[in-house]
Amino acid sequence: MGKTSSEERLTPREFLSIDEVAQILGVSTATATRQFEFAEGVIDIGTAGSLHRRRKRLLRVPRRTLDRYIVERRVRR
Image (cartoon, rainbow, N blue to C red; front, side, top):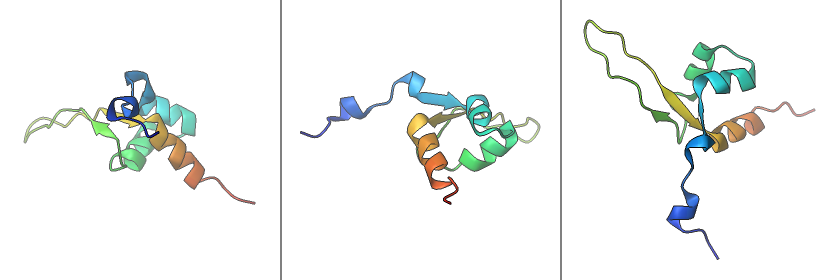
């Protein structure tokens, strides 16, 4: 039987901060932000910014998205 929509929902712990993602991948937070800012499933909960205020980026990356990213970029020998 297939999962219902309530079973498919992610819990808050299944989302990782950019700091956590950067640490797992061994890259800087700026690099992790660039790699995941437009990825599917990533949530941007930062501020919009304005003419005189810099935008604050606060991304949350689903664990599934990170796992898929790692598998797709794994070097095959």
